[in-house]
Image (cartoon, rainbow, N blue to C red; front, top):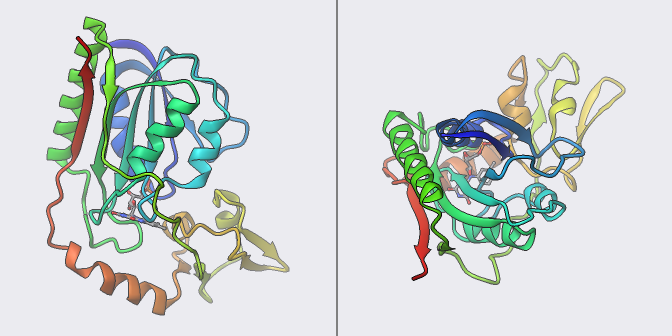
Length: 256
Ligand SMILES: Cc1cc2nc3c(=O)[nH]c(=O)nc-3n(C[C@H](O)[C@H](O)[C@H](O)COP(=O)(O)O)c2cc1C
């Protein structure tokens, strides 16, 4: 095991953090967890970093790419993971690796991991499960051995350039009448889209990324997607409820 590792993540509803933590804690004794949604994130201090991002519309959220673009990787080794809700990860892993490399990191291994869908929770329900966790731990062991052996190489992951267009957010979560105006949703919103205006939570559609953090974390379960949007998503993703999607792992190709 390594002594310390920095673990960078963005995880509005917890799935990305959960999967990424399994990886990071299997690689190093001490894991320095850094939430990319927080302001003023510093350059990594450890020699190896783990970065995990959720897949939104087949891409990584701009919050993640903008933050990574500010880092100076200084040739440090990076393990990247995108976490997605069964449908598809499309260009997200390629995009994550591209921004990491552009910031000076050497990506030595990557993964596309499956988690519960944060909009339609029945899709991928319970994932990452026991079997996923065992696979992620195995992946970590392989990474540790490649680091120990000092292998160099490049990781090739699926995806296309130019990346697919970003999904457009045309509606935001709303507050039900049970909302007690505590303002917790506004305090945790990663895009500062929710304003507590005269005791009413107003959500700015131009800022909201529909990440579902406010819906998942409201202490009184008073945040929901507008029912027509939720129903539309549930229908769109219905076919994925019965799909057992596998995690995918990508290692470096050794250059001889
Ligand atoms: C706005 C939005 C877009 C999403 N787009 C996709 C997608 O394109 N493909 C997919 O399989 N899952 C998609 N998901 C599901 C998430 O990738 C998945 O639930 C992930 O685990 C969420 O991370 P979190 O639990 O850390 O918030 C999307 C979720 C949201 C909220």
